[in-house]
Length: 253
Image (spheres, rainbow, N blue to C red):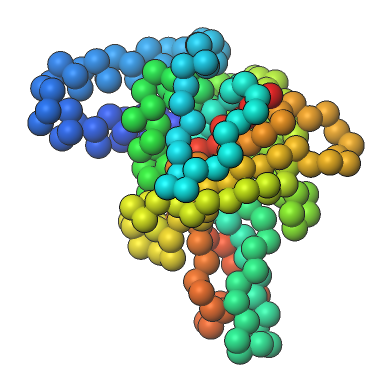
């Protein structure tokens, strides 16, 4: 799925999923206001101004056992959609999956996190039920391409990398390593169609020491996770396999 289609689908699906709650408790006018926010956000994506808002008003989601608080200032928020990657020793009957990084495409929801945090909280679940976005560069001339923040992958087994520079934006990049983890809420979506092995933990990532490039951020939080956890054993698995996931990433400077 192209990024413009995914971003549009996320926004529309979030609005639709919000409708039963909105109409039951506060009526259609509340839903209409949410719709107006989406329309305005879409316009700002097209205009390249969707990152202009008061980030001091954004509130980082908290896990049941909270992660340490941020030490810096919020700079960027994205929805990540991709896969958590694993390996298995197929010669060992008692082997368990070993984490081998992740790959994800990142979509800018910075101002939406300020203005409609309840809707942003729905987006990872919705994204997990949509196809993984491929051929992103095919949309480089489309206005909705502005919604693409960049990409996430791993440099090695423990170093996560975020490249938030595209043809349209330059939000910076950096390498990070896990500093703290907290289990996802028990209510978290376990996989696509809510079938899977569970949501990966929420994380605090700190800038990797010794990385030779420019570090645009000091901390990254992975929160609101959906899916991504492997099976408990390697029985029936290939030597390398992927588990689909979606999440929010919050970047601090």
